[in-house]
Structures are given as C-alpha cells and as structure tokens.
Image (cartoon, rainbow, N blue to C red):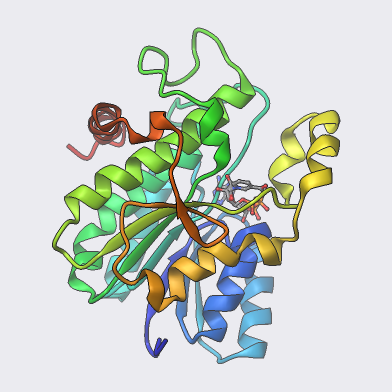
Length: 278
Ligand SMILES: NC(=O)c1ccc[n+]([C@@H]2O[C@H](COP(=O)([O-])OP(=O)(O)OC[C@H]3O[C@@H](n4cnc5c(N)ncnc54)[C@H](OP(=O)(O)O)[C@@H]3O)[C@@H](O)[C@H]2O)c1
C-alpha cells in the first residue's frame, strides 16, 4: 500500500463517514483536496489531520454541491494546481424530507447526491485517466432498493416522496458507477459503489424523529461505516475490480433496477444535458 504523493478528493469530509474516511487516507499518506461548504468545519478537520500526520496534507476548497457553478469552480482550482488524481470518493450525501430546489432548479436529493458528483467526476476524468491505477468510489446505499429512476419526473415535480427521491438518487449512484466502468474499460481506472451500513451520522437530521429513532436500533458508528470506503480505496484485493457494488467489504448484487443498462445509458445522457457538459 505505498501511497506516497498520492492525491485524493473526498466530498462530504466534514462529517460522518467522510470524516472517518479522510482520517484513514491521511494516515495512509494521501494528500487530500477537500471540497467543503462549511470552511470552519473544514479548517477544524485540516488542523486535526495535520497535527496527527504532516503539515500541508490538506488543501481545502470551498464548494457547495448544491450549485453546479460551485462544482465547476472547484474543478478549475484543482486543475490549476494538480496534474494527477489517484482517488476520487464521491461520498457527500443528503436526505431531504421535503421537496427543495437548488439554485439550478433541481430537486436537492437528486442534485447533490447524483448530479453534482456526476459533474465533478466527468470534469476530472481526463486527469484521472492520466493517473496510474486511479480509483473512483461512489458511496451509494441499500436505499437504492426503494428507488426507481423516474424519467418522467426526475425532479419530483408531479409528486414527492422523501424515500423515493433519496432512493432514486442512490440508485443513480450505482447506475452511474456501472456506466462509467464501461466507459473506463481498458483505462486502468476502477470505479465501484458501496453501501456503508446504517450509520449514526447527521444524514438523518432532516428526517422526522420517528424514522431516526427506528434506524437508531441498527446503527453502527461512523468509524465502522467508513470501513468499506477505506477498503475500496486502499486494499490491493480490489485493485482490478470495477463496476461492482460492495457491502461489508464484499461485492454483492444490487437490486435488478441497478443492473438495467438502458436506464444507465439514459441517465448518463440526461445527466450530461442537465449539467450542460454536452
Ligand atoms: N448514514 C447512513 O446510514 C448511510 C447509509 C447509506 C448510505 N449513506 C451515504 O453515506 C454518505 C455519507 O453520509 P453520512 O451518513 O456520513 O452523512 P453526514 O454525516 O450528514 O455527512 C454528509 C457530508 O456531506 C456534506 N454535504 C452535504 N451537503 C453538501 C453540500 N451541499 N455541499 C457540500 N457538502 C455537502 C456534509 O457537509 P457539512 O459537514 O457541511 O454538513 C457532510 O460532510 C452519503 O452519500 C449517504 O447517502 C449513509
């Protein structure tokens, strides 16, 4: 696991699973470039990591995943300073219980969990492909099982269900992973998705109290919740595995909706249009 001088981007590093993930990557000597929306939380994290490991190990860049412009700005900053990217972990996620829109007019579960990460990844693909043995990891969820890609109402304009909107966005993470793995075939870059477990984090803060109290019975700590992300990032066992979905550090089959190649293609094309990359 020689990781000297390797560079990683991890979204959602200021809390929960992402926070534990970046601490493990710092320990493994990764240089961390972290898009954060709350710079105060980011500075605190940087201070903690650099006190434990080495100075200059963390580069914070302000980035709000609610805004595609902000994602584009992050990409510009990264491209100006770095020529390689060994690891991209699309970890940030939200679960909104009410329908809310981003400044770009997209439903927030879909926009933050899928579209912004789609844009981030797509905009960095050339750098990633130039980096030997680069890895992309998408933090999805077993919640993809209660989602469908509702192509007739992607933004939940006609009807909104919190479970369906979150589930759709997590299903999108897996479909995106599978389509991207096809695009990256032969490039040496791997891309996998995962379910971290039911983890005691602030993800559930916007849900009603009853749901949170039910989930609490099953919850594991953020340290344990980060285990599969860290495994996919650092283990030699998965160096050549790609296009797969992991749970508890094992590849498992996702729901059949996540294996639908037509939906994966369609979602890719729509995401290109919505993020204006075409
Ligand atoms: N917790 C679970 O049980 C569970 C289960 C399955 C899957 N997951 C997935 O695991 C991933 C991590 O979630 P978590 O449980 O660790 O949740 P969390 O503790 O709420 O952490 C979410 C992270 O995302 C960041 N974030 C949210 N909105 C953002 C925005 N607009 N711009 C930039 N950053 C933003 C947060 O930043 P702030 O610190 O500024 O809030 C935080 O760092 C998510 O993709 C989630 O869907 C979680």
